[in-house]
Image (cartoon, rainbow, N blue to C red; front, side, top):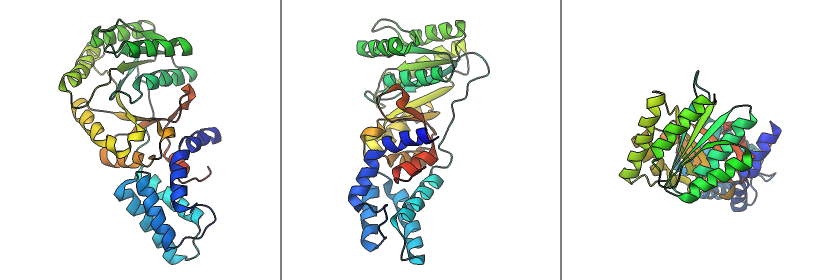
Length: 306
């Protein structure tokens, strides 16, 4: 448990640093005062917590401050973490396998969000957990995407189904399901091409992939996850809303959180869309994909210890 929390703490260090620099280290032993509350408000907005969450955090801290004018920064941090925990209630989700056949996870998102890398990392994590996995290279628009997934598969010893650049992505998905089922795999993870949510023809291809998968298993894909670039902060909410409307998302994977000071956006994404967060990306290595934990997240972004 401690090792997992350390991943969160290290991963959100830029968000913590941004808050700390703005507030001059308010969450240490320093006493809260009116000026530090103003600094905290600025820091929370900068970290992309949004109006609703920032207002709630400040209201709770001010309430405690009125009761105890000697309130210290650490107590304020604990209050902030408690507000986040409450705001994120229900946001955690666990990947549960289907009763029979491969559990199909479709990875969706715009170019550059980290879908291909996340596909490989997720497959590796499941493999390390004793599960058997096939990955499908259905981003057939970009030769680099197929080669990238093949490279990851070779490096991590993953089972992969791929085709040539320009091949029908839905046909690759169909073949991948057939292969995963024949090989008795627990999971099939489908890496799809990056697409702007405003491009209807590319969104139609996702629907075709779904239809083809359902020829093998009418309940597939069992999971449709949007892979979101966490460094975009709250700007990614509209993107997620459109994907959800057109494809029916069942979950989110938020990547690149280690490289951004906008880690507060997770809260706004959940509050706005109510789509559960399954995993977050906190680094470049395979082990840097982590199941989302509300408790670890809330403590990490406020610089608290587990």
